[in-house]
Amino acid sequence: MTSAVEEPTPRRRGRPGKDQETVLREAIELFNLQGYDATSMGDLAARLGFTKSALYHHVPSKEHLLQQALDEALDNLSEAVAAARADSSVTALERLRRAVRGSVDVLIEHLPAVTLLLRVRGNTPAEVAALKRRRELDAQLAQLVADAAAEGGIRTDIPADLISRLLFGMVNSLAEWVRPSGRTSPDTIADALTAIAFEGLLAPL
Image (cartoon, rainbow, N blue to C red; front, side):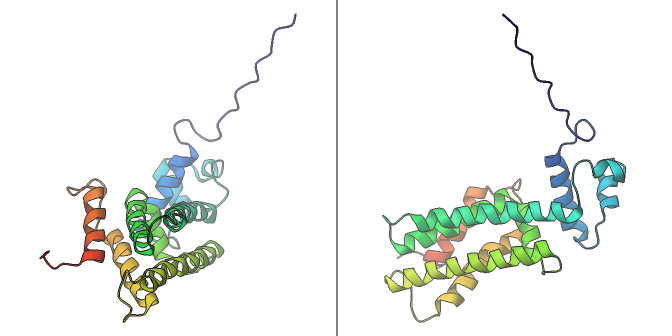
C-alpha cells in the first residue's frame, strides 16, 4: 500500500508579512491621501517598504488596485440595496428605510473604499465602469423612493429623484467626517441618520 504524497504548499508571492490584502489597504489609504492620479506605484512601494519590482509580484498595476477598491465599495452597497428591495413582505417605505440603513452600515464598515468611490471622476476605465454602476444603483434607490411615494408612505409633492439625491447625499456626506473608531458608535450614527431622514427633527407630540 503506497502512502499518499502531500502536495507542496504554494509559496506566497512577494515578501513575507505583506499579502495582497495589505497591499490593497495601503493603496486605498494612499489614493485617498494623495489622489489616485498623483500616486505612483513607486509611492506605494515606498510606503510598503518594497522595491518597485517586488510590488509587481503582488499586483499587476495601479489601476488593478483601484478596480479592486471600487468593486469592494460597489459590491457591498449593491448587496445592501438588493437585500432591502428583495423583501416583498414589508412596505415600500420599510424597504427604503432598510436601504438607507444598509447604505450607512456599508459606508462606515468600508469607509476608505467608499470614500475613494465618491471621489472618482471617470478619468480611467475603472472609474468609468464604477460611475456606470453608481448610476445603476442610484436608479434603484430612486425607484425605492418612487415606490414608497406611490404607496402613500412618503410625500408626493417633491419629485422622487430629488428626494433620492437629497437622502443619499446625506448618507454620502458621512464620508467627510465619520470615523469608525470615533466616540459615536456606527449603530448610533446609522440610527440617528435614519430617524432624521424618516421622522425629521421635530420633537414627537
